[in-house]
Length: 536
Image (tube, rainbow, N blue to C red):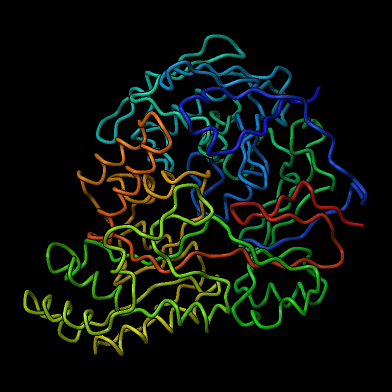
């Protein structure tokens, strides 16, 4: 049977009057290619095993969202549609009732039930399980950052119904439920979670192509799930995600006809990619924010001295020149901590002048910091992953910092994204680190809570501000979209003073695809909708 779907926009869902998700029948996708054809695309080795509640980076995220189906999913424009859910309803935005469509199964043949969601969420939220997505459950009753506590706000009513009681009202709660942290997990997962993470059993449009489908550091092979009957029914036979050590290598394969879709054009091809792939390229806004962070555990980067140095570093960067010269118009200098494609974005926050190139003020602030504690001959390094095409902009940024402040500033390359994340997680950084963010769901809160709340899984550099968290919480529980947006903007004005992250620019998705494929659509979050791609 066909699953229900909706077409409620993210902004409508966030209003207090839109407290339910329900829908009409899904339409069949067009299939004018070979339904057995395998699509090839680029990716990166997942940092962790493929456990939904422990996957927060893009390499693993591409896989998780392909092999699992959550309560809702997102359209190319960021609209929300029901997937496993038949309805998600509330009268007060605090007590929610979730009803599931009947007939869903995991690829091992076991049913998807309310317990499939509740048990997975309980595991993800429990402090001792140390799941990187645990903070996504922080508004459900019983959640704790500090002590072992189950989510008392979850209750299974029947195989197809469960309830969620929140600590505070949250009108856009359903909006987050398409993110990987909220995916269901089968009973088999709990028999051997380590083994499951290597060969996960999902309920989504794709599944792993048997044992050995995940060739670590090489690729992962997915094939269509023949029993999937949701809103993302594939029109192809599967997807092979190839892990490249550089974007240049991936681009060369795309040029040579050995890669169907590339979702990140290297800077070396910015001047030629549109002519290299006539009518088969995109350059469109996406919910991607780029920045770099300075860990609070390093000398010189906390307290009053740290605040001065962070502002000085920010003002020492000529963002406009970097986006013009290095990125050829595929980036836009940042004016806040979110993205222009998200409702509520602002280019006029109080304090945003700290994001403008001001070499004189930068040098003055640096001198004030030196009066507190001399920086001396300490080298400022900026860590980045070499497999992500970042060297050119890193070189430009550190040169700008060095020339403006008169210090030695260098780039520090890690071979892979996973290597860079491992040192961040282990708090082994010696300087700044690249810190991009691709939205999990289309909301201002998603750019703020996961990154800057103390204890959140992606707050890796140790920022803590009770004032920021208080204002953020007021926004999350606001009754209207206008009130919430005002609070989220106020929270960002606190960040502009503290600068736990130094905003750089917003990214467009710049992608290309070969003449081997058609119907290629890049989503609001920059990820292609693989299930819609046709191949002869």
